[in-house]
Structure formats: C-alpha cells, structure tokens
Image (tube, rainbow over all chains, first blue to last red; front, top):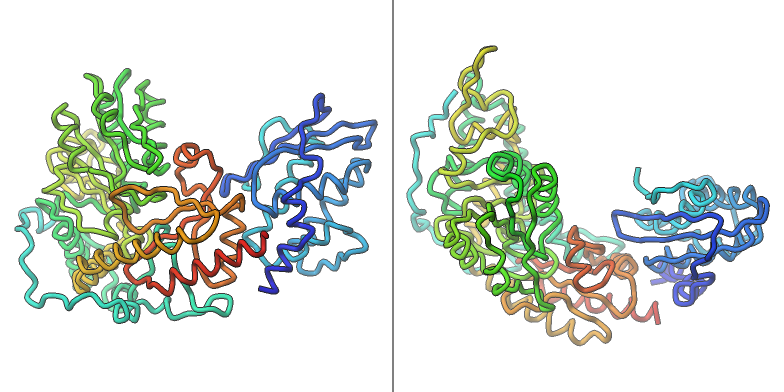
Length: 150
Length: 426
C-alpha cells in the first residue's frame, strides 16, 4: 500500500476533508463550471478580480478526494496571483501530471507537488485537472460548462 | 438473396444427449485464461462483470478458427469459404433462437449490442407507431440506453415518457405501473435486471398487464441473459434485446429478438446491401426476415463467437451456475454488511449478483483506485443510470458485479480492500 500513500498523501486527505475556499463568491466577477461526464465530478469556480490580480477565489462542487483536494489547493495557490501567474501554474500543473519529461519539483510547485503521484494513475489525471480547466474557463469568461472530454 | 433457413421453424430444444456435469467453479475458472493473470502484483479479482464478462477459451478459439480457416463474406459468394462462413453465421442465429426459445430464427436480428437493438426499435417501430400525444412507459431504474432513444423519439414526435417509480429497496412500484396506462400508451420498455441494483423485475407479469391494455413490451435483457435462462415464448414480449459481451461473447455483437408479427410489419432500420430483394431506381423491395434488418456486412466473427458462448453455457450446467451465483451473492451480502459505514443500494427481494454501495463519505473513484491496487476490479461512477443515482441522492456508487466464475475468495479480497480504503481515509 506504499504506492497508495503516495497518491493519498496526508495533505490531499486533509484538503478533501476540509476544503479551503469552499464557498460561493457573491458577487463574482467571473464564474465557470467544470464537469467530467464520465465520472460525474462537478466543480464551480468563482473569481473576484482587482485589475489582473485574483483578489479572491471560491469553489463548490462534488467529486472524489483527488478532485476536491486539487480544487482546494488550487484556490490556496492562486489567491493573490496575477492572471498570468495563474496561467503558468495551470501549465506547470498539467505538465507535472502528463509530461513524462517534466522535472518540476517542490521548489516550483509548492504544495501542488503533492499531486505528482497522480501521474502514475492515468485514469485519475482528469480528476486533478478538472478545477484548473474550470479556472481557465472562468478567466476566459466561458459561459457554457466546460468538460474534461473533447 | 433469401436464406435457405427462411423455411426453418425451430422446435423446442431437445434434452442434450450428454447432460452437462454438475457446476464446478474450479473447473469453470480454468476455462477463462484471463482469470489466471496478476494485476498490480496480485491475483486478478474481476468483479466488473456487469460492465463486460470475461471470455472462455472456447469463444477465443472460435474467433481464431473463423479468421484462420473460414473467413469470407456471408450470403454473397458461391465459393466454398463463403458457404462455410454463411453456414456458421446462420448456425449462430439458430443457437441464439434455441437458447432464448424463440419461435423461429427469423426473429433473431444481429445488432451491435443492446443499445443498437433499442435504437432500432425506436427508429422503426417507434417512428411509425408513436405520434404526438402518445405515451411510452419506462421505469426509474432504466440504463441510459433505455431512456435516451425514447426521449429522442418523444422530442421528435411530441410524445411523452411515463416513468414507473421504484422504492428504496430498488423494486418497481407495480401499483403505480398499472395506473400509468392510458389510451395513448403505445409501448412499455423495461429493464429485466437492473445493472445498478441487481433487481430482477417481474417482467412476465408486467407483459401480461401491458397486454391487458393492448400494449406491446420491449425488455432490455442486457443484465439478465448472463445470469438466467430467458424464454421468449414464455415471456410473450414483442421485443427483447441483449449484448453478447456481457454473456461471455465478443464485443460488437448483440441480439434484437422481435416477435415475427411485429418485425414483419416494421420498416427497415438501415438501408444497404443484404436487406433488399430488388433494387432499381424507381422501386426497391426489401428482403425477408431477418435480412431486412441486417444491412451491410454483419459482424460474422462476433456472431460465431456468440454461438460459441451459448455452446459454452450449455456445456457447464447453466442452471447450476445460477444457483452457485445466488449462493455467492448471499455470502457477499453477509460479509459486506459487516463493513462499517457501508450502505448497500438495491436490496430487492428478487435480485442477482450486483452489489452497489457507498462507503462512508468516500467517493467511489477513490474506492475504485484503492481496490485496484489490491487487484480488485470494480466499477465506480453513475453506471449510466443517473436517475437511479438521483433516487438515492448520490453522485456515484461503487459496484461489484458477480459472475459464476467468482469465488468466496474474490469477495474476501473485496472486503479486505474496503478495509484498506477505510484505513487510508481514516
């Protein structure tokens, strides 16, 4: 079960149980919904902006421990960051999970590095990236729910 | 070209000359090569039979034999191989007809699977017989494949779906069923065995009730055929659909049974080769049953594989297998009830080996991933039955679904995996 401890690290289990910023922002400057039709995971991301800086972020939804913890840690990471910085985190996070040649480590990724182990569980990568896709959709002001399927 | 089998009408099956030896799970397991493999360094415990069943050696060999020695197109050539392939294809149809006790092999239409079978009925019988204001009765526990084709038809025609509710045990409310009929009811389409709950619906009684109102019935038998004998002449339904791959045959082959009276009156499904008698630009006449519904080159290998699966089921004492499975289900219920915070969905009086559950507030995907690390394959998700999930107010469930090759050791591995899940999630 050592592999599983890698996937279900204490940090992930903690954020699953006590998700941070798990709330609706009203009013929100930006909002988007993410949906994974294969498994039914749902996430809603709310943003308040100040210029190009993310002043506040909240999320709601239902899903597995990986998707919930990922959304929670995403909100912690990007709160106060600029839109450009959050896009960089999006790309790095995606690369960490899907690009075998990626050597992004704790230094660059911070707490998000807890999800590095998801790379070994291909069926679960979409759980970890769903909230990030929703964030990007919120930033781009996409009105229809986005999905992890094309 | 009409089939030489058009004149053939089947007699009820005769008792086998060599009755199958009593069911023996050890011997049966040895027939399924995949069951010997390891997953994540552990022996495979395959409990996802509701999604698809594993294939016995006899089915794998039949496919190999067909492609190695018999491959040709059917109903077309005059050459040697074409005749052999045609004979094998039509022999498979006769095996299906006998297996489900159809009145004639003309009533057996080969399709891709249950989904295509239901779409065929909706697009032919449905589009012709169902109009504005008409009603179709389905149930709350249907698989999406027995909801969406009817919903699409209703949208097109301005017809309405009436839904039989179920209780929390996962049993249909038969009293309400009786009240759903009106003069506008044109079809009842109902799942035989629920893929989420394992409930065996009283389909024979439901057909009789529908007939009392003059309404034909389609039964989605995808989950029934792998678990029990079905008998078309006893059920008396107009249509019955099932998939090969859930009954140990290949994917991509399935069966639409239709009573000849209905099939004869229905327009064709797809147009193309094989389904015609005569084509000129002014007039086209369609072929006889079953060809009328089988446009294009069919899944010949798949049909032969399905025939081989039926031969296999006939060789293992299928009734004994069903009894064994019922016993295993009882054991699984008992031990799963001992897992703290586990809630079983589907506790119908009459059910087969499907065990859907939720474990505390742990998401089924996490349960499924952790079980996989123990070599245990289950399904996690909404099981293509979102209305059932809504009934229990849950987004998803974990499902272990049994087959006759599963053992008590498999159930024990599941339970031990569930204890690991609880440990990890504290």
